[in-house]
Length: 480
Length: 98
Image (cartoon, rainbow over the protein chains, first blue to last red):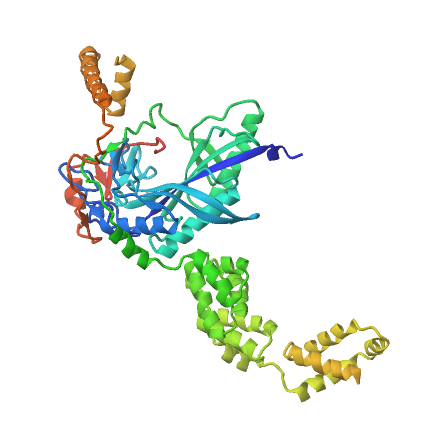
């Protein structure tokens, strides 16, 4: 028996989402990524004496939209608190965050797992300001500080410990990612740090009610790394417990190069943040009018889109889920479906051939080399029997590589399907003449050879004979 | 409530303040009297009092999401003892951040 199966894993995630505002949470400085150091840090971001924070209205809208998307309550008034700690990239010596009455509380979302749907609770989502960046490499005995990111709005989304495997944690993260992209409240770019994840993991013997001691792994910045960091932590904790030792409650770091987590050096009092209400900010009132106006602006989210795709396009729920994970991908599919008038075929091509080419070149749907109009046109040529599905793949590859239209490729390469029954009859005669032995066997009752003849016909026609017509005429011919 | 030397050292460390040991007795006395006052406040009957978010009966004004600040790096970096290539320079910190 696998030793791991005696153990149960409990995971909770804290996801930091950088909100896509133009200006900062409490100042009018720009939030653009990648500018020259400290050119987007004003005196408020730098914590100069005498300055006062003023809250960005757009941030409230974004947080409320997120709350509505995860079926949560919106707290009004909501309030800000100071979280105190010293670090050079935090110029004020405190971070303005939320402790009591966070803007979003008690929501949930659903993830798809092997057994079906699973509800994952979201304890809260609160607003806070990001810190600056420390650059340790470039200076001897000194650290460089860039405060451009200081004060950028973050929404920290805290899940309940409802996740029980690395796969579930990644499914949950992908749902959060999908929601913030659909709502257009963040670009969700994990490589640039627009979405960062802290992972809380503990293990316990199956059947135990009490939670095991947990560790927190900080700043894991890709779906793959989240999966690996959790798998590593589970293995490590189980082996610690099986050796009769205790898991130490601590903060750890994931090293993607060695694929392991290791403890961070932490000071004895490091976690005493001495929160208190932020005296520079008044409580924030979020009235029903504000919330209702945002309800009207809510886009169709992936869950309702999935349901609509199943109903309107007769897709399977699985296919609909794949198509709706990413908003741009879903839109692309709908454009192809509208153009081709055969949604099932459009779904197969978008998820199949197109995705394969995108993945191969590591491109997003926005960077596709075959646009929705051209793909729609290609599918129409299958539909009207100009070409077969097999030939269409050849045409698609050519479209991808040259940017040419399907019509032009079919024309210049002479790929048009043979639908002329006289011509097909001729090819069939040729196939029968070339294979007298098999013809004899067929007539003696070896029905299975029908497929062989179809294959021969397709070969002679270089795949261009219309398969339905070939089947029909061949049958007539053999029964003569 | 009694404050121990160790408590005082911890508070001083968290606030990054250096305190001369000579001041410990008087500081402890002052802090203890503050805590006594807090204790007194905590014991007040607030059963029928509506919780308050803020001493002022006002709510936070909001600003539009607009970039209103321009780059003042040069001016602001004059306040720093050390800067280079646009970065503020501080003594090396390799402590893992919280």
